[in-house]
Picture 1 (cartoon, one colour):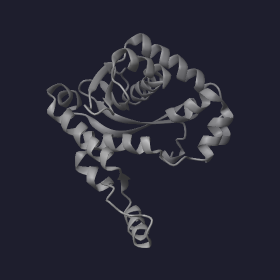
Picture 2 (cartoon, helix red, strand yellow):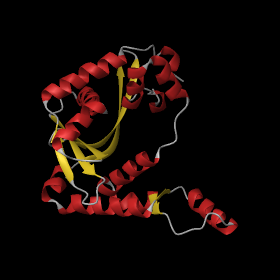
Picture 3 (spheres, helix red, strand yellow):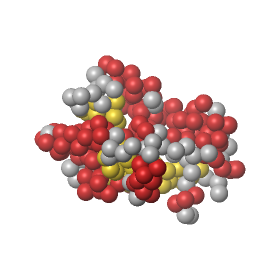
Picture 4 (cartoon, rainbow, N blue to C red):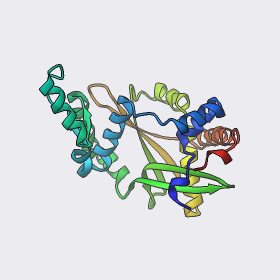
Length: 231
C-alpha cells in the first residue's frame, strides 16, 4: 500500500473530536501552515536537524516591500523554497538550539534518537500515520518538542489537556508499539518557552494521563466513516 494512502493522523483526529464533517473538510482543504506552525517547525529543525536549518529557513532581510524592486526581491526569496522567519524568531531558534545542545540533561535526553520519522499502521482497515519528533529505540521513549508561552509546571500541565497533547502521546506510543511489537516505555514533552529567557522544561507524561489520552483518541477514531476518505 502506498504511504500516500495513509490519511488519518492526530491532527485529523482532533478535527473528528469536533465533528466528522469538520474532519472531512480539513482533509479536503489543507490549510497553509500558520506563522506559529512555521516557527515550531523551525525550532524542531534547529534542535534536531541543525545541519538542515539554513537549507530550510532564512532570516527576513530588510526589504521595502512597498517598492517594485522590494516586491521583486521578496518574491525571489519566496521562490527559493525556504521559509522566511522574522529576525526575532530566527534568532530565537538559534538560541533554543544552543541552549539544548549546551545542556547536559537535554543533549543526553535527545542523544541516539531517530529524528522526524514517519510511522504507518493499518488498524482494522483504517490507515493511520504519524510523524515523531524523536524516537529513542535504546531508551524506548518518545520525545516531542512543543513551543509554549510558559513552561510553568502547573500551567503547562493544563495546556497538555487543553491542546490534547496527552491524546497525541498515546496515539504515537500505540503506532510505535504496533510497528515494533513492544510497548513504548514513556513519552516526554520538551517544552520550550517563547519568552526572552527561552526557558525549557521536560515533562514525563504519567500512565494515568496516557490512558486518558488513549481513551480520547480511540473515541475520536470511532466517530467517523473513513471509507469515502481514501484516494
